[in-house]
Length: 579
Figure (cartoon, rainbow, N blue to C red):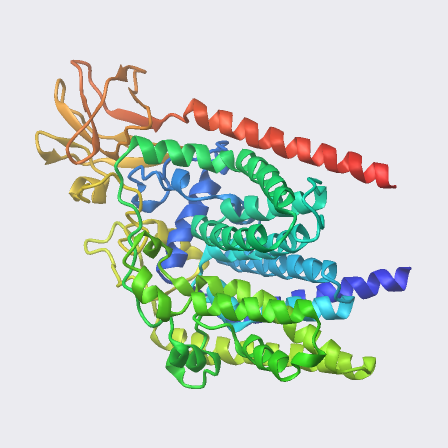
């Protein structure tokens, strides 16, 4: 029993050490290589960290980050992984915490994929190998380390739960009788909930493919009512659990006219053709390494391995491979060159869908070997070789496709908002950040994400850039201090004067503006979407501006947390009944 526990522990320990070694190699010089996406998510993490540090659990607007102008980003983006990153900032130095966060995500992805593989009938060794090559696939690793697609990589960690839930859904009944399957519903609920609480577009993608899968079941399967019943129950519970994000998000969207993230132009990278796909898969040239618009070498070869040994493969392996090919094709340019101009273009990068294929093909690779090789020792040897090959390919791409290039071309910079000419790189530039430089990422910045969900037509003027009060069309020398969901401005205010505050205002939010005498001011939102008040005859040298957390947000939290607690209680009861 003891030896068995140690063996099972090693199946987590060894991959965990491998992930740690790769991340330690990337950050061995103490640098965090920050590009546009990392800077955006670092701002979000620091915002939540400072709010938690000062006792506020629910950030509504950005005042410690995102130029400190009151952006509604905390409300508009799912924040489950952000809370994890914020907690790690309490434990580790800033840059170290970001690497630990990457490791936690990789281990989460690996552990879930391993468990799902085991549930699908793979042995301990097989499930570990499948999960390892899935997590180590170049495109998934690139999204974590290089592109820092933070919400997306956390969302994709939970996608295998949805895949398992949908597979179980086809087997719940063989006729049209309704029989709710608690495990199937729970898998779908957990998977969908954590996906939407991590990344909205990933949720939309998974829902889209789920709809296609459901349509297939409704047409070709006999258990139509059962499918609809289980999915409906799962959908209702998912919505209740997700209200913590959905309700504030919907209210903000309906109550404001905002700048939403724009779709980029469709490029061969975003939606590859077969030439680009194969080039990125077998990347030797420097410009093709460590890309995300592929499924990786092992997944690609798994397709041909299954096709060559088709007669020896079971039904699941064949179906998983064919579905994977369909998913891959759906993310290429052949269809998207017609669809990208529609509202579906909001997906931005159609190759996002490849992650589903990577997971299924990782399973297919292992199952194909099982069905062809009869000798256990030979099978296990091949699994080890496959894992080592996956590691080798990953290290090659990390070194030559990212670390060497970024060390050669990235710059270490004093990225401070107080500089006379703030540093402003093009969105895809990289710069090196030490622990002591980390806070500078929260200063002046104009890269992707900097102006997401600001009120429409806002001008990022000198008042907002410098965080200075405006009276009589003149900037006042102002000392701005961040507080949870607000700012404190210290300046010599003129009496009885219209005063423009360097904070944007949203119609869906209520603000509280008070001075050092606790006098509360009425406010308006001007044409530039900034808050405006008129000072009184009293002397004012300090203004505190706070956005109030809407009552609907508290209600959403209560409903979601209560639903979660009920699920845990029912789960514990069911488990006790089975013992």
